[in-house]
Length: 146
Image 1: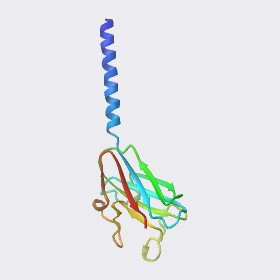
Image 2: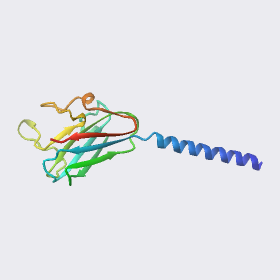
Image 3: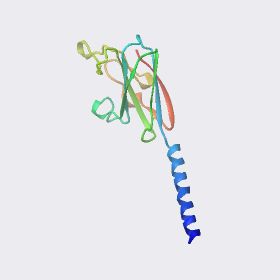
Image 4: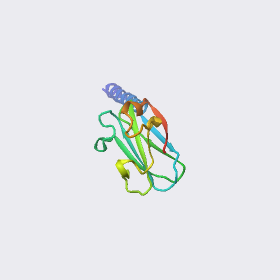
């Protein structure tokens, strides 16, 4: 009887170790490195999207972050992403800290903004497929905010 209990206990321990190691292997993160700030005032608002349907829809953002701009380069990591796949990032430099993109005449942005892959077409955001990056592990992207 003791041998059976020891075997079952050993089996459970091995399963726990295998499960824990698989969880560590299947972690996904996206490090976003942003540079090109005209000033080191305010904050950087970062939105991460995980589908074409949610792209640039505030209510459907996958993850977001607000990071203080204290240097000419700002870094933020979105960790524990749910799965490998395509993700796209939209950012803006919120110098007045009101956490919204200020716009002027005809809705043109007054604050600097950018997208992953440094795509920036005129008069509209890029398509999700143009801004999307594939994440299959721990990835880093660089965005120039101008």
